[in-house]
Amino acid sequence: MRLIILAGGRGTRLAEETHLVPKPMVEIKGKPILWHIMNIFAKQGFQDFLISTGYLSEVIESWAQNANEPWNIETIFTGLDTQTGGRIRQSLMATGDKQCFATYGDGLANIDLNQIIKLHKSQNFIATLTAVRPPARFGVVELSNNTVTHFGEKLQADAGWINGGFFMLNREVVDYIHSDDEPFESGALPRLSREGKLGAYTHEGFWKPMDTLREKIEFQELAKENPWPWIQNI
Image 1 (tube, rainbow, N blue to C red):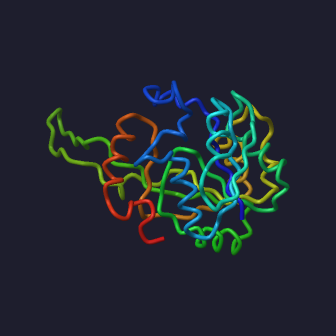
Image 2 (image 1 turned 90 degrees about the horizontal axis):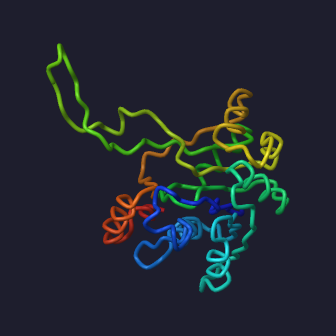
Protein backbone atom coordinates (compact mmCIF):
# COMPACT_ATOMS: atom_id res chain seq x y z
CA MET A 1 0.00 0.00 0.00
CA ARG A 2 1.31 3.41 -0.99
CA LEU A 3 1.97 6.34 1.35
CA ILE A 4 1.16 9.87 0.17
CA ILE A 5 3.30 12.44 2.00
CA LEU A 6 2.08 16.04 2.00
CA ALA A 7 5.33 17.94 1.57
CA GLY A 8 4.36 21.13 -0.25
CA GLY A 9 3.81 23.68 2.51
CA ARG A 10 6.02 26.68 3.22
CA GLY A 11 6.79 25.83 6.85
CA THR A 12 6.67 29.46 7.96
CA ARG A 13 6.80 28.63 11.69
CA LEU A 14 10.21 27.05 11.13
CA ALA A 15 11.52 29.94 9.04
CA GLU A 16 15.01 29.64 10.54
CA GLU A 17 15.39 26.45 8.46
CA THR A 18 12.82 26.68 5.67
CA HIS A 19 14.22 29.73 3.88
CA LEU A 20 16.72 27.27 2.36
CA VAL A 21 14.87 23.94 2.25
CA PRO A 22 11.23 22.82 2.55
CA LYS A 23 10.33 21.67 6.04
CA PRO A 24 10.26 17.93 5.17
CA MET A 25 13.97 18.27 4.26
CA VAL A 26 15.00 19.65 7.67
CA GLU A 27 17.40 17.11 9.10
CA ILE A 28 17.31 15.02 12.26
CA LYS A 29 20.47 13.03 12.94
CA GLY A 30 21.76 13.73 9.43
CA LYS A 31 18.58 12.58 7.66
CA PRO A 32 15.58 14.68 6.49
CA ILE A 33 12.47 14.22 8.58
CA LEU A 34 10.95 13.05 5.29
CA TRP A 35 13.31 10.06 5.39
CA HIS A 36 12.37 9.30 9.00
CA ILE A 37 8.66 9.27 8.06
CA MET A 38 9.31 6.87 5.20
CA ASN A 39 11.47 4.69 7.43
CA ILE A 40 8.56 4.24 9.87
CA PHE A 41 6.51 2.80 7.03
CA ALA A 42 9.33 0.82 5.41
CA LYS A 43 10.08 -0.95 8.69
CA GLN A 44 6.50 -2.24 8.63
CA GLY A 45 6.67 -3.45 5.05
CA PHE A 46 5.28 -0.43 3.18
CA GLN A 47 7.89 0.88 0.74
CA ASP A 48 5.91 2.70 -1.98
CA PHE A 49 5.88 6.48 -1.56
CA LEU A 50 4.36 9.42 -3.42
CA ILE A 51 5.60 12.81 -2.23
CA SER A 52 3.23 15.71 -2.93
CA THR A 53 5.45 18.75 -3.45
CA GLY A 54 5.02 22.51 -3.75
CA TYR A 55 7.38 24.97 -2.05
CA LEU A 56 11.00 24.36 -3.15
CA SER A 57 9.83 21.22 -4.91
CA GLU A 58 13.13 20.85 -6.75
CA VAL A 59 14.94 20.18 -3.46
CA ILE A 60 12.68 17.24 -2.64
CA GLU A 61 12.69 15.97 -6.23
CA SER A 62 16.48 15.94 -6.32
CA TRP A 63 16.69 14.11 -3.01
CA ALA A 64 14.09 11.53 -4.08
CA GLN A 65 15.96 10.80 -7.30
CA ASN A 66 19.19 10.18 -5.42
CA ALA A 67 17.95 8.52 -2.23
CA ASN A 68 20.02 5.42 -1.62
CA GLU A 69 17.21 3.25 -0.31
CA PRO A 70 15.43 0.12 -1.65
CA TRP A 71 12.17 2.04 -1.80
CA ASN A 72 9.89 3.12 -4.65
CA ILE A 73 9.82 6.93 -4.38
CA GLU A 74 7.85 9.17 -6.75
CA THR A 75 7.03 12.87 -6.57
CA ILE A 76 4.13 14.92 -7.88
CA PHE A 77 4.10 18.72 -8.02
CA THR A 78 0.71 19.80 -6.66
CA GLY A 79 1.13 23.59 -6.69
CA LEU A 80 2.74 26.23 -4.54
CA ASP A 81 -0.37 27.32 -2.64
CA THR A 82 -2.57 24.23 -2.89
CA GLN A 83 -4.21 23.25 0.40
CA THR A 84 -3.92 19.81 2.00
CA GLY A 85 -7.23 18.63 0.55
CA GLY A 86 -6.12 19.56 -2.94
CA ARG A 87 -2.78 17.80 -2.53
CA ILE A 88 -4.51 14.60 -1.43
CA ARG A 89 -7.03 14.88 -4.27
CA GLN A 90 -4.38 15.40 -6.94
CA SER A 91 -2.23 12.58 -5.58
CA LEU A 92 -5.07 10.07 -5.48
CA MET A 93 -6.24 11.00 -8.95
CA ALA A 94 -2.71 10.58 -10.30
CA THR A 95 -2.25 7.10 -8.85
CA GLY A 96 -5.68 5.53 -9.15
CA ASP A 97 -5.05 3.68 -5.87
CA LYS A 98 -8.14 2.18 -4.24
CA GLN A 99 -6.62 2.62 -0.79
CA CYS A 100 -3.56 4.36 0.56
CA PHE A 101 -1.94 5.88 3.60
CA ALA A 102 -1.40 9.63 3.85
CA THR A 103 0.49 11.81 6.29
CA TYR A 104 2.06 15.24 6.70
CA GLY A 105 5.75 15.80 6.05
CA ASP A 106 6.61 17.03 9.54
CA GLY A 107 5.58 14.52 12.21
CA LEU A 108 6.85 11.21 13.57
CA ALA A 109 5.14 8.45 15.53
CA ASN A 110 5.68 4.77 16.32
CA ILE A 111 2.25 3.89 14.98
CA ASP A 112 1.22 0.29 14.32
CA LEU A 113 0.09 0.62 10.71
CA ASN A 114 -1.50 -2.81 10.54
CA GLN A 115 -3.80 -1.85 13.40
CA ILE A 116 -4.97 1.17 11.39
CA ILE A 117 -5.68 -1.11 8.43
CA LYS A 118 -7.57 -3.55 10.64
CA LEU A 119 -9.80 -0.84 12.14
CA HIS A 120 -10.37 0.90 8.80
CA LYS A 121 -11.50 -2.25 7.01
CA SER A 122 -13.54 -3.70 9.86
CA GLN A 123 -15.76 -0.61 10.06
CA ASN A 124 -15.91 0.18 6.31
CA PHE A 125 -14.73 3.73 6.84
CA ILE A 126 -13.85 5.95 3.87
CA ALA A 127 -11.12 7.63 5.92
CA THR A 128 -9.46 6.77 9.23
CA LEU A 129 -7.31 9.24 11.12
CA THR A 130 -4.92 8.65 13.98
CA ALA A 131 -5.99 10.33 17.21
CA VAL A 132 -3.17 11.30 19.59
CA ARG A 133 -2.75 13.18 22.83
CA PRO A 134 -1.48 16.75 22.38
CA PRO A 135 1.88 17.44 24.00
CA ALA A 136 1.78 19.06 27.44
CA ARG A 137 3.30 22.47 26.69
CA PHE A 138 1.97 24.69 29.43
CA GLY A 139 1.70 24.66 33.19
CA VAL A 140 -1.82 24.37 34.57
CA VAL A 141 -3.00 27.12 36.91
CA GLU A 142 -6.04 26.55 39.12
CA LEU A 143 -7.52 29.64 40.76
CA SER A 144 -9.89 30.49 43.57
CA ASN A 145 -10.68 34.13 44.38
CA ASN A 146 -7.61 35.29 42.44
CA THR A 147 -5.36 32.94 44.43
CA VAL A 148 -3.41 30.16 42.75
CA THR A 149 -4.51 26.94 44.45
CA HIS A 150 -2.58 24.59 42.19
CA PHE A 151 0.21 24.96 39.67
CA GLY A 152 1.63 22.04 37.72
CA GLU A 153 2.17 20.39 34.38
CA LYS A 154 -0.83 19.52 32.27
CA LEU A 155 -1.10 15.78 31.76
CA GLN A 156 -1.51 14.55 28.20
CA ALA A 157 -4.29 12.23 29.36
CA ASP A 158 -6.29 15.27 30.47
CA ALA A 159 -6.02 17.01 27.12
CA GLY A 160 -8.37 14.92 24.98
CA TRP A 161 -7.49 13.82 21.47
CA ILE A 162 -6.27 15.63 18.36
CA ASN A 163 -5.64 14.66 14.76
CA GLY A 164 -2.15 13.12 14.64
CA GLY A 165 -1.88 13.28 10.88
CA PHE A 166 -1.54 9.60 9.93
CA PHE A 167 -4.45 8.55 7.71
CA MET A 168 -5.75 5.58 5.79
CA LEU A 169 -7.94 6.64 2.87
CA ASN A 170 -10.21 5.04 0.32
CA ARG A 171 -10.23 6.53 -3.16
CA GLU A 172 -13.80 7.74 -2.57
CA VAL A 173 -12.38 10.45 -0.30
CA VAL A 174 -11.79 12.42 -3.51
CA ASP A 175 -15.56 12.98 -3.71
CA TYR A 176 -15.46 14.80 -0.36
CA ILE A 177 -12.75 17.27 -1.42
CA HIS A 178 -14.46 20.17 -3.20
CA SER A 179 -11.47 22.13 -4.47
CA ASP A 180 -7.68 22.41 -4.40
CA ASP A 181 -8.08 25.50 -2.19
CA GLU A 182 -9.74 23.55 0.61
CA PRO A 183 -7.88 22.20 3.65
CA PHE A 184 -8.49 18.50 4.21
CA GLU A 185 -8.98 19.18 7.92
CA SER A 186 -11.85 21.68 7.57
CA GLY A 187 -13.41 20.29 4.40
CA ALA A 188 -13.44 16.56 3.74
CA LEU A 189 -12.92 15.36 7.32
CA PRO A 190 -15.98 17.15 8.80
CA ARG A 191 -18.10 15.99 5.85
CA LEU A 192 -17.02 12.38 6.38
CA SER A 193 -17.63 12.69 10.11
CA ARG A 194 -21.20 13.91 9.59
CA GLU A 195 -21.89 10.80 7.51
CA GLY A 196 -20.28 8.41 9.99
CA LYS A 197 -17.58 7.53 7.45
CA LEU A 198 -14.57 8.82 9.43
CA GLY A 199 -12.80 6.45 11.80
CA ALA A 200 -10.23 7.17 14.50
CA TYR A 201 -7.40 4.90 15.57
CA THR A 202 -6.27 5.97 19.04
CA HIS A 203 -2.49 5.98 19.47
CA GLU A 204 -1.05 6.23 22.99
CA GLY A 205 2.59 5.83 21.99
CA PHE A 206 5.18 8.31 20.75
CA TRP A 207 3.97 11.17 18.55
CA LYS A 208 5.61 14.50 17.90
CA PRO A 209 5.34 17.21 15.22
CA MET A 210 8.12 19.54 14.11
CA ASP A 211 6.53 22.95 13.69
CA THR A 212 9.11 25.16 15.40
CA LEU A 213 12.85 25.49 15.93
CA ARG A 214 12.38 24.39 19.52
CA GLU A 215 10.72 21.17 18.38
CA LYS A 216 13.53 20.54 15.91
CA ILE A 217 16.06 20.87 18.76
CA GLU A 218 13.94 18.50 20.86
CA PHE A 219 14.01 15.97 18.02
CA GLN A 220 17.79 16.23 17.88
CA GLU A 221 17.94 15.32 21.57
CA LEU A 222 15.50 12.44 21.13
CA ALA A 223 17.60 11.14 18.24
CA LYS A 224 20.39 10.39 20.73
CA GLU A 225 18.28 7.46 21.98
CA ASN A 226 18.76 3.99 20.52
CA PRO A 227 16.42 3.04 19.00
CA TRP A 228 14.79 6.35 18.18
CA PRO A 229 11.44 6.80 19.97
CA TRP A 230 9.51 6.93 16.68
CA ILE A 231 10.62 3.44 15.67
CA GLN A 232 10.48 1.78 19.07
CA ASN A 233 8.19 -1.26 19.20
CA ILE A 234 7.43 -1.34 15.48
